[in-house]
Amino acid sequence: MRNLEFYLPICAFSQNCLKIRIRLAGMENYFPAKKGSFLRVSQKKNFLICDFIKMPHTKMRLFMNYAIGIDIGGTNTKLGAVDEKGNVFEHHEFKTTDYGDFASYMHALELAIGELCAKIPSADKCVGIGIGAPNGNYYKGTIEFAPNLPFGESAPIVEALRMVFGYKHIYLSNDANAAALGEKIYGGGRNLDHFIVITLGTGLGSGIIVDGKLLLGADGFAGELGHVCAVPNGRVCGCGKRGCLEAYVSATGIKRTFLEMLSKYNGVSSISNLTYSELDAKIIEDAAKAGDIAAKETYEITGALLGRCLADFVCFSRPSAIFLFGGPVKSGELIFAPTRRALDENSMPVFKGKVKVLPSELPASDAAILGASAMVWHAIELEA
Image (cartoon, rainbow, N blue to C red; front, top):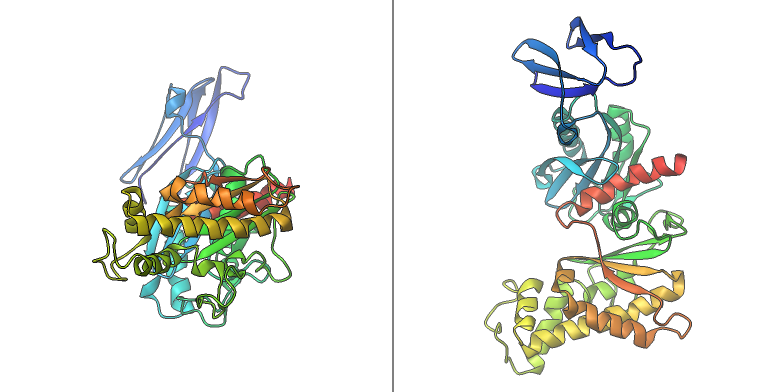
C-alpha cells in the first residue's frame, strides 16, 4: 500500500462532537471529532493513522475532481491530471516509439494511466479522459492514417479506453482542435465565443471556435487551415499538395524561406555556415533580432503570408481574436508585426481593425495536456 495523506473538514454539523467512521484498505475504526477541526488520515507502513488538527487554509488539501489529458506525439506520449481550473498537478510520460503496433501501445497507455492515477489520493475522482493525437476523429474516436504512428488505417482508441476504464467522458481530437478548446476553457478565449487558434510547429494546425463550440465538420476534420493554398503552384507540402500555408508558415517553412533569402543575398548572413539540418527557427529568430538581413526578411515574408491568409479566414468565421501558439510565436513582434499589418491590409472594410491577433495564454509546457483535458470539462459544462 502506497503512502497517503489527506484531510477532511468537519464543519457541516450542529453538534460540537460526533463520531467519524473510517474505512480504508480493509481497516475500520471510529474517531471522535470536534466541529471546525480537520480529520487527517495518513498511512505509514501498515498502520492507518487518524487524528484531528487545525490547519491553515493555505495547506488545506480537499478532495476534488480531475480530468486526464493525453498528448500522443510521434516521439513521446504525455499524460497529466488537470483540475477544472487548469492546474496540471501530476504528470507521466513514456516513449511512443517504444511500441511497434496499436495493441502494444495501448497496453503501455493503460499502464501509464494507472500509474498516473496511483499518484493521486484515491478519494479524488477522475471525471474522464481527453486525448489529442494526429488525425484524431472526434466522432468515431479513432486515429486514422496518422503520420509517424504505427497504428494502421484506423485505431479505435476511445473504445479501447472505455472498455478498460469505463468513463462516460472519453474524447479524442487532433492536437490543434484540442488546443482551441484549451484556449476556450483555460486561456485567452475564456470570455469569447468566436476565435481561431493557429498552432505553429513542424507544421501548421488550426482549431476554430464558433458560437462557443468547436467546429468539427462532417467527419471531425474541419479546420485544416494549414492546407489552404497560400502560393499557387508553390512549394510541395508534406500532404502532397503544392503551395499550402504550412509549407511557408511553420518551423520547417521558416527554414526553407531563410535558404531562399540566403540565395537572394548571395550567402551574406551571420549563420550562412550552418547546414539545413543544423538550422532551426530559433537560430533564425536570434539572427533576425541581431540584425541579420536575410533572417529579418524571412520573418517579414512569413508574417505577411500568414496575415494575408488570416484575412481570408476572417471572411469565413469572423472571429473576435486569432491566437497564435508554438515555437515560432516566441519570436514576438518579429512575426506578430508583419502578420497584423498584412491582416489589416488584406481585410475587407467591414472587418478591418476588428480582429485581434494575440499570443496564446496557454503555458507552453502543458498546453497539449490542457487542451486534451479541456474536451472533458467542455462536455461536462455543456451538460450542466
